[in-house]
Every structure is written in C-alpha cells, then in structure tokens.
Image 1 (cartoon, rainbow, N blue to C red):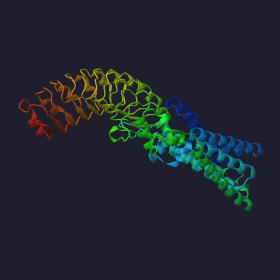
Image 2: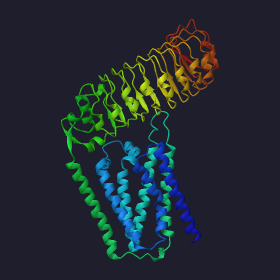
Image 3: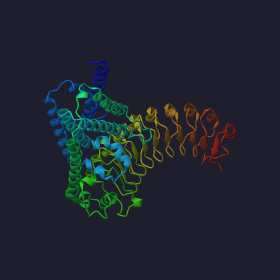
Length: 502
C-alpha cells in the first residue's frame, strides 16, 4: 500500500470513528433521534467504506451494496410518507423554520438519498463504469455536504432567543460529516484500480440520465397523488374551540375551519399566532387539539380568555410561548416543555411557579402583573438572561441570587426592602426596582455592569452610593420627591443621566 493510500485509509478510519463517537454523544446529551445518528455515522463512514471496498474485487460486495441501497431507499420513502417529511417541499412556511429543523424533519429524505447513492455505487462497482462512479461520488459528496449544513443550522436554532447558544455537539457532528464529504472524492480517485475503470458506453451514457429522469417523474407523480389523496379532516372536528380552529385555518390559508385539510398540512405548522386583538374568530377559551400540530415550536395566544393551559403538554417541542393577558392560574402543563426558551405570561392570575422549576433552557421570562409571592422555583433557571416580575407581591428575592447569567431584571412595584440578595448578579446590566420600599442603595455598588437603573417611587433619599457604580449611565427617579434626594448633582457631574424628576 502506497503512502498516499495509507494516509487515505487512516484519515477515513479516523473520521468514521469520530462520527460514531459523535453519534453516541448526541444520543446521550442531545437526545438526537436514531435516524439522525445513523445518518451521521453513515455519511462519516462513507470514505472508509470506499477504501475497504477497493480491497476486494468480489462481485458479492457490489451486489450487497446494491441490496443495501435498495433497502435504505424503500425505508426512506416509507419513513418520508409516514412522517410526511415531504411537506417541507411545499415551502408554505418560514425558510428559517425549514433550515433549523431540516436535519431532523427531513432525515427520511436524506435516508432515501443515501439509498440511491448506494445503488449507484454498487452498480458502478459491479460494472467499473466511469460515469456511474462519477455520479455516485458527486451525489454522495453533495448529499453529505447538504446534511452537514442542515446539522449546522439545527445547532444554531436557539440563537434567536436571549442567551441562546450554538450547540457544540451538533457543530462537531456537522464538521465531521463535512470532512467525510470532502474526503470521499479523494479516496475514490486515489484508490487502486482507478486506471482499470472503463469509459462509459454510448448506451450507458444515454440510459443512466434517462433512468434518473424517469425516477424523478415517478417521484413527482407519487408526491402529487399522495398530496391529493391524503386523509382530510375538518379543523372544527380537531380543535373544539372555534376561535382556535379559525386561527389554525387562517395559518393554513383556509377560508374557515369547516374546510377539510390533511395531517400533512398540520405538520407544516411550526408557528401559530392567535393574538386575540387580531382575531376575526373571537377569543380562545381552550387549547384542546394542539396535539394535531406535532411540529409546533412557537405559539402566541395572548389576549384571549384562557382559564387554563391544558393541552400544552401535548406539544413538547415548544420553544416560545406567549400567554400574556389571559386568566391562567395553573402552569402545571408547562412542566414537560423542556425545550421552552421564551415564556411570556404577564397579566394572568399565576401564583405558583413550581412547574417552571425544571425548564432549564428558559432564557427570557415575563411574569409581570400576576399574584406571585414566592420565587424559589426560579433558582434552577441558571441560563436565564431576562426576567420580568413587576407588579407582584414579592418581598424576598434571595432565590434569584443563583441566576449568574441574568442580564435584565425587572422587579418594579413589589414589596422589596433589601437588595442584598441581588449582589451576586454580577452579569446584570439593567435593574428596575421602581415602586418598592428600598431605602439603602449600598448593595448596588457590588453590581459592576449595571448601566441602566430604575429607582423612582422608593423612599430612598441618599443617592451618593450610586457614584461607586462605574458602569452606570442613567438612572430614572420618576415618582421620587426631588427635594428629599441627596446626591443628584454629584451624579450629573459624573456624567450620569438623571431622569424622571419634575
């Protein structure tokens, strides 16, 4: 074996091993589906399979490759129809939503593509046809690169949320698949027996493109037929609440909830906005039926007449939820929404925050205007960046001291007196404590990054401690008696904007 071929073998083996380790890691830490992990291993092992295959000239291995390709193609088509992955082709929803979900939702289509590549590879191996070899190599390389990009997009899906971050495990997997894609044509060209590959015959040169064209036409006809013959149901039968049914109908482009639709269409709903102020179907009173939207990631049901959120536990993939301006008291159904990153539930009747205890991915939470007195359940949200607890009945914020990543905190109009528990929030840049019972500002001097402070409506008089807040750029004192405040001029002389004083 030449040095070049030995290097190719070692590189291919290393990438295949890395792909296997990455797939195992994703299964343990990211709960990636079995199909996604299989594809990572398959694409990552492709160069090694080519290298090992070149070591044997037995036709058995060629036929085995063809058989494997046939099985994977059939399995991929079956999974695509069963999971309705083909609905992404219609592009009747956000391109961004397609991109960040493609690695998972379109995995059955990738499996079908992998099977077709193996069919080409097996035929090329059996016939030594240069055209088939080239088609198999190019197809395999492009498919691997496309899936690598899909994995990369999936890794960045949390970026739109405050405090969101790219998943390093998925980035690593994407890099491994991309390296395998780039190595694949190298090992094909440098492998033994390359000089023995025959030029394609004229018949082959005509038949192969013609066969591919026929397959494409058959696939198109099959998809069109499936789209027309899929089982259809009236939305009014799936969603008992007429306002919710009407909102789903509008999202799907239907005239009303009495129009029949298919599960394929329902699967295409990634985002649902049913704000009561913009509704033409009335206010929503029940969320029953949401289980028929299995891919729902973003839900806005603000300004409705919800007394409960029963049914949300049937949508485990939710990442953003807005419940503002309702009558909700119990958040228990949210306890299973472990992928939730953004929660807006202001102006409800919530008192118990226990259901939020294990939602560790939450990065932005709005709970103003409720009946909250206890915040200990929030101590576990160690990645949260923005928290709004204004207009509640909170007296003790000790539980918030563990939120080291908190960037913006709103606590206005509560019953706070002591700010000492907040001194551990060293990442805080905005603090709103207006309308409380604070008299001592010394604890604020231990918050090095706070540049925006809302302080009005407190009985505090001495503002001089604020001079020690080096990052402070502005302080609002609306509601305070300017004649009782000491240190206002010193703050202004230091370049701090002081607003809210008559």
